[in-house]
Amino acid sequence: MSTESRLNKLFQTSPIIPCDCLSRFVIMSDCHRGVGNWGDNFLKNRSIYAAALAYYYQKDYTYIELGDGDELWENRDMAEIVSTHSDIFELLSYFYREQRLYMLYGNHDLVKKKQKLLRCCDKYYCESQCCYLPLMPGLCVHESLILKNRISGQSIFLVHGHQGDLLNDTLWRFSRFLVRYIWRPLELFALKDPTSAAKNNTKKNAVEQRLSAWSAKHSQMLVAGHTHRPSFPEHGASCYFNCGSCVHPYCITALEICNDKISLVKWSEQPDCCRKLYIGREVLASANIPGEK
Image 1 (cartoon, rainbow, N blue to C red):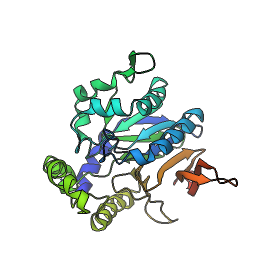
Image 2: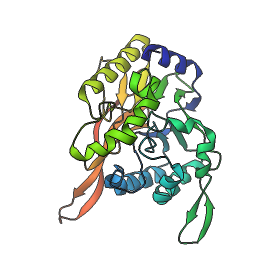
Image 3: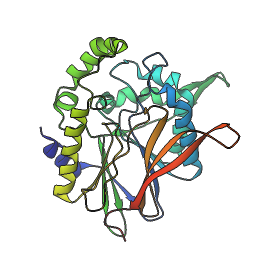
């Protein structure tokens, strides 16, 4: 099925999240949380991510994860990922308890659409209290969502972005096999994974062109991840946005929606005037949400 057909179908069936000018959302994608080994790409930015989550929780944002939050092509056991990054999942649970968390699945964690896989998120083992505590019981992961303004009716369509990609959508099981048993070991020798849109510029461009074309054709604001490449359109271009990823070298990127504005931000370690490192937030681009005054 083509990207056009997949997105059309999803747009008609997506759960709708009502919002207004007072709503605050932060959108991240492609954390690729692993099991703490040499292949865990999340580890290098883990502290940055934790600091960003704490900031958004304190500022009353709703957190939306656009897929590939957990690396389930290279790893089989979701429970091991939760155990390895239990402190991160505990932070996420704060959002969940206040109904401020929504998660989508991408190609690397597509198996999350099976509800039984998410049972490991019901509780976690707290080392400090030596007992199991509730985490995110009943967590439901979607393929897509729509943010819809109660007043203006303006909508924002959220997807991971792999939809319609032959290797990452239709043939995702074959691609998972290649990644798990062939390309991941060979990555040690700097051989790029040809199935990955994040590591292949030709695939990145093709995916982004399809998403941008859909957005332009339907005059619909579209936010995705998948390619790991942040995108913030210029005035007059199609309304395709990409929040980037949490596995950039030395930084993570995100999209913020606040006061009817959308902003692309970067979180990274930065030195202060005394040469001490701190984790800072930098706004890279900002504009009114298309269609809003």
